[in-house]
Image (cartoon, rainbow, N blue to C red; front, side, top):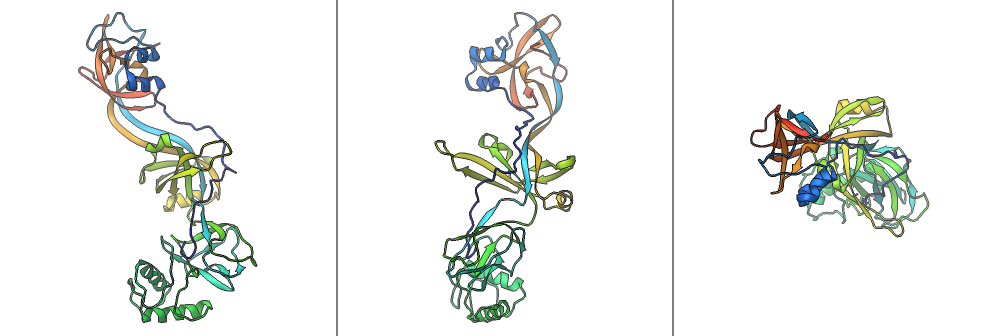
Length: 374
């Protein structure tokens, strides 16, 4: 925040649903072992006999299945939390005494007081970066332009919105200062403007009126005002977290909406005594479409399901993962059955999903009969 700074609040565990993750697919460890090392040990892990590419098998497999043409989706469902997005902290940057604070749940918009110090408001403005110095005649920089854009949005004029703080800007500032009831100096002091990306909703208050408002003091925690779903992923599932990717959110009472990933953040969670910190990938999905807002409006806080799709392959040839065999010369194959005989045919593997694997190879077509375990 501008004259306040923002930092991530610790993840809140209270109220989160303690349910086991429900991935829609998982690649068997045995297959991973084949990719890593190949050879006899990997074949044993699959429970199948390997062979030479193109060579005949020593007997028919215990069961068969046909190569199918279908669409594979690398999809996975995770637990999410419906709320108002990440919680940020507003930290004071001016000296004095706290004289007024908002209440939890209050919504504050541009030009209004976030809190008060020495009876004067700390005014909320919109911007992605905090201010760090007084703004006065002669000051130049992007922070000047950011402030002037806000001043113009509040209806003040007579100055040019650019990176230079001129006497015209100072005159508009004096008019603004008169309207908010503070000394008309024409100077914007550090700590008297606070920046956020947009309107804020007060999550909690961390101070009390009458306390000293020393620089660095934590004042309150806030969120945005648009509802959002947040999901914590293990780093192993980071492939699912692509900004702009579409997801399907299932709200309570099985209401389903489509949205997209807006933010992906790496979060280091502090360790408990004697343990190491853990790294998570936090995904934020803002429900900002008209349909999503309407569907989520009935729920302030709720547990939801989020289906991620990391990739999709349309109209590809597939077999069950269990149909793969490790060839002695390396790589994968399938046991193709023709009448009373069978042979091992090398294949290239593609996407793994839902217990199936995409394959291509010489003579492999839709309907080809291949061996599988019972």
